[in-house]
Length: 95
Image (tube, rainbow, N blue to C red; front, top):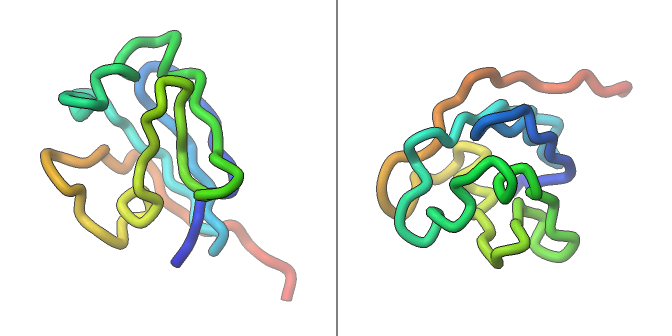
């Protein structure tokens, strides 16, 4: 299964996520951060996203982390709506 290797905060609730299989997704989390995810639903905290070096997924200083299989679109979210895909493409690789 692909894992997160890079993340870039694009502003608001939008992230550009690069996966180990060269998939890149720009995901908009607007309106999807409720319940336990509400702790990251502000500009300052949301922008502090990073890649967890062990779990290879997104994490925040609040302790929130997200399932990389859901982020890659391989699995549906456990509850509620998932983020909206704004862009999706694969990086070219030299073979």
